[in-house]
Image (tube, rainbow, N blue to C red; front, side):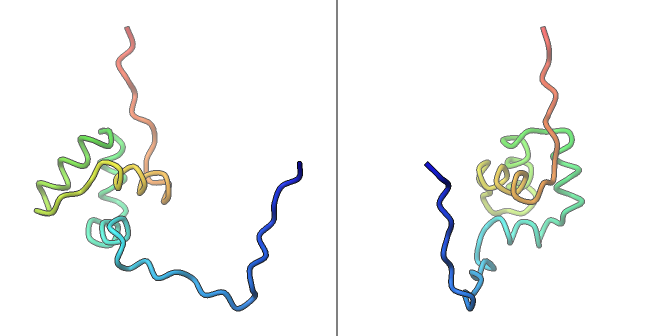
Length: 81
């Protein structure tokens, strides 16, 4: 089977995302701070750190989305046995 192509109209408007948690997080914390946190910690630890710093719950899955969507961090090295 072939791949399905979308048939979007030429005048399609982009979606408003200013209400999303990941967008707010990126605007509040900043890209450099997120990169710094991602370089040394995983998504659960970064979520706890950001929740404590900003007083608002930030889900680990929002953190994971920011990391992958905005290409902000690398993989955290796991201890090898």
